[in-house]
Length: 382
Ligand SMILES: Nc1ncnc2c1ncn2[C@@H]1O[C@H](COP(=O)(O)OP(=O)(O)O)[C@@H](O)[C@H]1O
Ligand SMILES: [Mg+2]
Image (tube, rainbow, N blue to C red; front, top):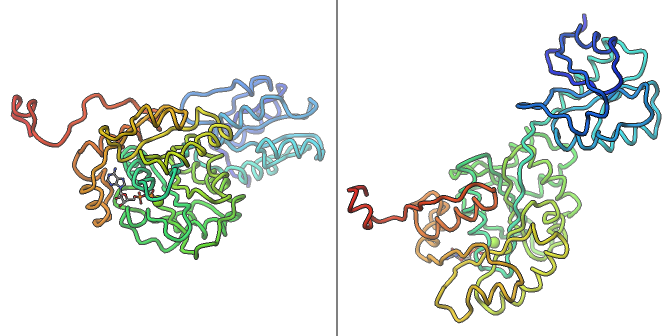
């Protein structure tokens, strides 16, 4: 007996009642559209369960196929064609179509193809990737990245990927004891699925899942070509993926290339600014100014080097200035608890603003700074 389909199937192609009837007879809810609708097709709410592209009476893949794939990255696609033409198959594969059914169409053939693509179906999270890179070591890049990730994790599923080799500190900041690392994920990139990925990450109290730094020795470098597939995989499952990038590694360029936003962390020291200037130029040229955001950490408004000086040297606006708070930072570190889980301070407020800015969330209008203050006295609220 042929199993029944209970899914919403959209068919693109010249109207063909027999295909629609076949799908409907299998229990599917069918929506038929001309192929030129592919580029602009949109449904409200969840994406269709399967898309069928019928090219039996046309030559080649319809133009809108790639646009549909981008709009519905998680929607499995099946091609229906008269023959298995190699050129067409290649085009189909490039557009993310992984199954093809040829004539004569049968219930069994359709059900089997749809069954296979829906089994591979990925949830449509399509999250954002934010890469943090420091203009110099030891200036607080990991501090900002971990706390921004914690701020984001209060809202939606967040993953932290520590790309540092030997001595990535994110696990310490997050109070986690990872058993696996980025290396394990990269080594297994070809068989990565949700279940395997779950065993490679470690859940933390900050609700951030951590894919920890590799414990390999210095001098070992990550395989750059696998970074991109890893991050693309991660963004299917996580709304936010925060990447802690080392400065000098070939793989880092791949991570930066994948990132929606690149946060370049600086401070007000000359050595940092010198590096920062070079890096800001390189990042803008390679990835475009829109993707680069400069943040000044441990910002001291009384310093000889002002906010404007940093902007002049780096050639970019300094979007966020994060204050220095030695005591809070040290305490958070020794307790393995991100600052964001603790009391509201100026430092926490600044990092929360940075996280909101990255995620395009509205800025918080009133920041409740710890302490009663005048408003507290007036309202009697602590
Ligand atoms: N805004 C800040 N105020 C005070 N100390 C900070 C701040 N940001 C970072 N630090 C401290 O600076 C040190 C280095 O931070 P870390 O995030 O590990 O730097 P990086 O990742 O750039 O090497 C840590 O001891 C951290 O607690
Ligand atoms: Mg670091």
